[in-house]
Image (cartoon, rainbow over all chains, first blue to last red; front, side, top):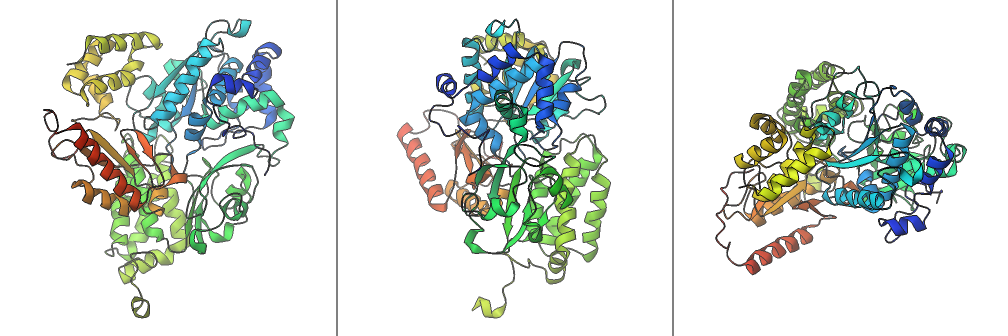
Amino acid sequence: MPELIITKNIDVPGIDRLDVYRQYGGYEALEKALHEYQPEEIVELVKKSGLRGRGGAGFPTGMKWGFLAKNEPRYLCCNCDESEPGTFKDRMLMEKNPHQLVEGVIITSYACRVSTAFIYVRGELAYAARQVQRAVDEAYAAGYIGKNILGSGYSLDVIVHRGAGAYICGEESALMESLEGRRGYPRLKPPFPAAVGLYGGPTVINNCETLSTVPAVVRNGADWYASFGTEKSKGTRIFCLSGHVKKPGNYELPLGTPLRTLIYDEQYGGGILGDRQLKAVIPGGSSTFILGADKIDTPLDFESVAAAGSMLGSGGVIVMHEDTCIVDAVLRMTEFYRDESCGKCTPCREGTYWLVQLLERIEHGHGKMSDIDLLLDICDNISGKSFCPLGDAATSSITSSIKLFREEYEYHVREGCCKVGPKARKPVAAAL
Amino acid sequence: MISEQAKQRMRELAARYPVARSAVMPALYIAQAEEGYVSRAALEAVAEALNMTVDDVESVATFYTMYYQRPPGKKVIKVCNSISCYLRGCDALIEQLERRLGIKRGETSPDGRYTLLTVECLASCGTAPVLQVNDEFVENLTPELVDRLADQWEAEFQAEGQSQGRSPAGAGGC
């Protein structure tokens, strides 16, 4: 078992309470940050550690902090609006070890000279929100949040804000709109949040897992953190393994660990459900491109997964075995984007609707051969033509699945049924 | 009716945020907790507390799926039907629930007991298939567990006695 960082103490009984969290070194990183470092030194430390965002884009965290405009007040938004299909790590971090997140929020706020921080928790995750709120309340009472924290002269206010059911609010500009009390419509960029963000102020927005990692980086140093992972993808991250594996779950691994290890190793996925053949893997949540079974030896780091033709995204690894109808699976994923499109941009609002219509037609045996290229044509008319990446995300599974499994789409059109899975027309011998 | 106490909490929230209207989402939750859904009175109370127009509050309330436009059942059952739950067989469980509760997805039972909804990924893919009953998770669902849950809900309603005069919510979804 490689050394764990973010999930190290996750199963310690009572770690969600301040006293137990402190017994395990909790808030020592905050004391160290406030008493031994100037804010800019923390930014440099995190830059040097190589930590990159764990929300999806993988942007270098320290660099993001360094981009903040100099005017005040500045804001921090911690993005805990976890909704990407196949992703369930932030919920675990909030429910089980909320103080680690809160400590990360405070250190980051200090590093970025922020006076008000928001933790935006997805509405559906009611228990996670209660856990984070309790941790914030305990931190206020202990003097870790509030005026003149630990005698340092630094003051901070932290507000836990619950969403109310909208995937789009995980997009950073929509999240800020939502926090400002409006519908979650994405904003045009530029200006980027680092210049003009929440309430018009410079704003840093980081994912829950990213900020949960910050205390360990400060406590143990940049070189220690950078000793994990690969040359360009430093550290560890939580891979959310789901779908057709024997042991789905959250597994923290050094970046660069082969996909095969995650799926087949007895410590992790334990192999494919029913010992069937692997068909396809989505490596970073449903918004990323599908990879074929031939990519099983891809190291799970940002560069290698990109070279294999996809993205590490949110770390949501979704596994599909040989009996999965790819058209039906893609239809299911596309319905998600149709339902979650906020409706602001026409290509995404209308395009996702038509993608579902066409996929349904093909799946149910009424498709035309020309529908397959029509799907690609619609994808081309959505991708890159909307304010935010939701539209692009909706096309990933379609374009990649047609590239990898075009013959399965054609089979649906030709035979009027699925090639594999429960809705396949069984050969006569098998039906007997 | 939204209580004076609830209105006071909304005003306190408005003061907590850098800008008052940032409190519109938590204020809508407070109002919904009082009436079970976002009623006209709820919209008016939030608007008054935050110095917004009723239309403005309504435009926010209608964007987010967790603010109910009409009264839901006493037990709101949300079943995830996104990709990871799909791969783990959620569709059969949704059909099983439809049979057990006697309503289709998206509907509220005529006696006002149940609302059955299919929802997008609930961040519980490692323990798929999954559902929520009034925001609390039930994970690793199986047909047997679904049957036990449905039995348990029925037993709870039996124990409560017959509806106790609460006017039943209309069928037709929420």
